[in-house]
Image (tube, rainbow, N blue to C red):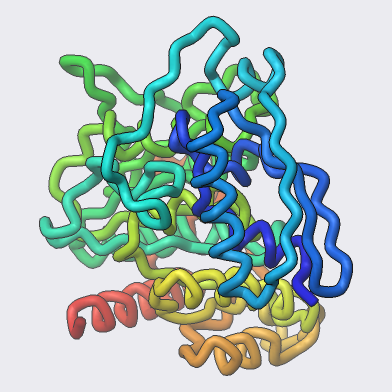
Length: 371
């Protein structure tokens, strides 16, 4: 029997006809009821239009039938004024009609796949850093890998795409904000890495209270309105899990590759497998797994204590049919606030952990160069 999560994944490409945005991301597929092989649901629509409703119904039935669900009961209702406002279209706003002749079952996602972003033909290697859950050190891995690539002479950009949990500016010790030149945003450069983050635009560490479409809009601005210059690598620090931002990245950057971060704990690795499975399902190559907090090494005797268990990263790599790039120990950078290049989370190049990240960077360069 199909699950609710599977149903939502199947129907995510189905767009509201007038807005051309995913009904799932708009949260306009409601009242989902699954009983054995029968599915019933409510579809919220912007306009009561018989022809468009029929096309939407046909697409929903077509996609569910391909998943083995033949008995589908659909109800349609017009969006309320509040729902229209949340979608960015007040009740008195005109809506654009979809282009004539558009294929009924193709190009009907959130419209992200056609955005003009950094030219993939310009030699930019897009690498998304993902995890199944928070608290595994994904952002730490991202910033240190970015810095390691820059130390090896690569031109690196970093987008802090974890818009709810942005942390990259603080982790890299960035105290300045992006500048504006001729209407374009100039990213902040630190340790040779060009950085863009939601954290630059939030005052006093206030929370971000946005729905999915607004998150996608901000991510699009990071690509389209920022002068990145020539890059060899663009790293994206994704939010944990498989939510809206991860899906937007998969749609916007089909050529992106991924690195999955986990701890050695069995449950963390089990959850991280979902992020890896999502990458594989959307035909994104998984470059490898980084096992963070793999062990604690005693500074006096050198003994390793596996305080979070052992083997999670290796098992995850086997599950995803990829390699284990590194096992990073539990540690903290030996940085002091009085140092001119102080940052809370970036390891120095000549430290053991800094050397580990250099090794990961070399593996990534070899993999990307080989392809």
